[in-house]
Image 1 (tube, rainbow, N blue to C red):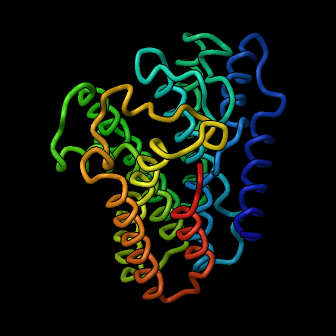
Image 2 (image 1 turned 60 degrees about the horizontal axis):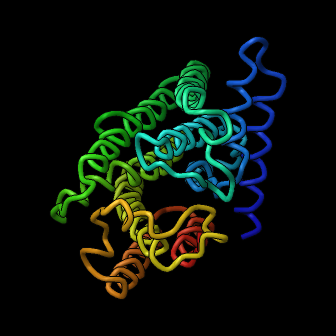
Amino acid sequence: MMIIDGLKKTIDESLEQYFAGKGSYNKMIYEAMHYSLSVGGKRIRPILLLLCYQLYKDNYIEVLEPACALEMIHTYSLIHDDLPSMDNDDLRRGKPTCHKVYGEALAVLAGDGLLNEAANLLINYSMKRGTLGLNAAKIILEASSVEGMIGGQVVDILSENKRIELEQLEYMHSRKTGALIKAAIKAGAVIADAPEEDLKVLDSFGDKLGMAFQIKDDILDVVGDTSVLGKMVNSDAQNNKTTYVTVYGLEECKSICSSLTEECMELLKGLSADTSHLQELTNYLLMREY
């Protein structure tokens, strides 16, 4: 995991630098945004973007801006997801949630701020990088939209305290969780001007990895340890949500997750580039404990 750890460190440093010294009378909103970004996180989405870019180009520093934008979008979604009006969580990444530290109003604005800063980053980047940068920005912003992550969150809210069909569950998670993961993969490859046949393989890889990621999350919500996960366990059961575990059972979910990971590995082996680091990350996501 040395390469992946190095990428995470670079992303952390870039995010830290982005917020350094910002703000005057509005300084507290920057503090709230920075707080939620800096309290931990695996940085999976930006790392995926960097790794997929590195399949075809050497200098991943060239795509740090869209990678950081992805992490801002992901973090904004977590801030809003934790709000009392949504999942009402007190703990995220092992720390008090944004609204517990800064109050609900500033937490809402911190999420709004991160989304808008991400859009600024993507627009500025596309102005420098032309069509490839613009296409990547479109992929990321569409994945964050009402037909992407927000749409999945809406279905999640509407599905509380009721049993939903598997088709609706898959729709929800392919957007709430899967869309941004898939966008990270596609955006990195698109900026690198990857061959069309590779983009099709990576599209399928993104679908399968996103589903495996969510099933693993559902498993950890049942068997995980709060001190390791950094958030409360059994929250889905407490909110009476349909999950992959309630549909398939715990052991079958573990089997499905393993099978999806194997399918991801096979897809990666069919690409025209060295995918060893992507395979390492894919396997890590199966074995993770948080």
